[in-house]
Length: 197
Image 1 (cartoon, one colour):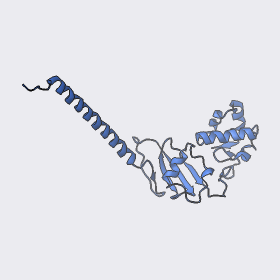
Image 2: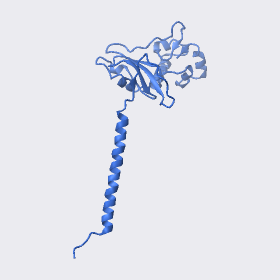
Image 3: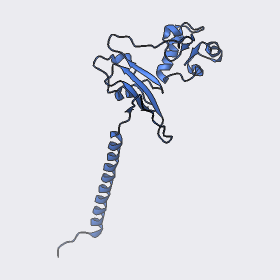
Image 4: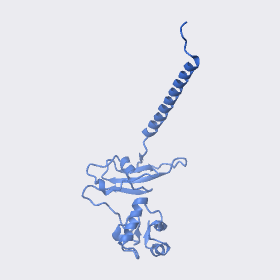
């Protein structure tokens, strides 16, 4: 009489095989969903003349004007938390003559920001230190020399203000100065009427 397979062993092999197939199918589906999500463009160019309605259910976004030495300058809508590298990627990357070292690719962006990428040999623009005619120093565009003209702000403190701006994005209010190391309530009150954002 020929030996027969043991039915419990046969069922166990079939069960293990079925489990492996289910795990592989679930993995393939997960990877497929990830690829489809990644294929969607994370950013979009917005024509300047368009007026888009705001969808309250949509994730928060930043409008950033990218100009200078990039492939496709323009106004871009980026996800909240985007960094300079994301804005340059949205604008098609650096132009061949771009000065890559003139921009901090890791710096977080803020809504309404203009990002200017200089060409090689051109100094990075610092913008106007003060708005038209009112004489206040703009914390978001001033360089160390402009900040150094403020009372109680020397070169070291001016550099701390710029370092904070590069690490955290634009100042949204004058009160943000309190987050800069070395600036307290008294110093803020001395600067409040002399600076703007």
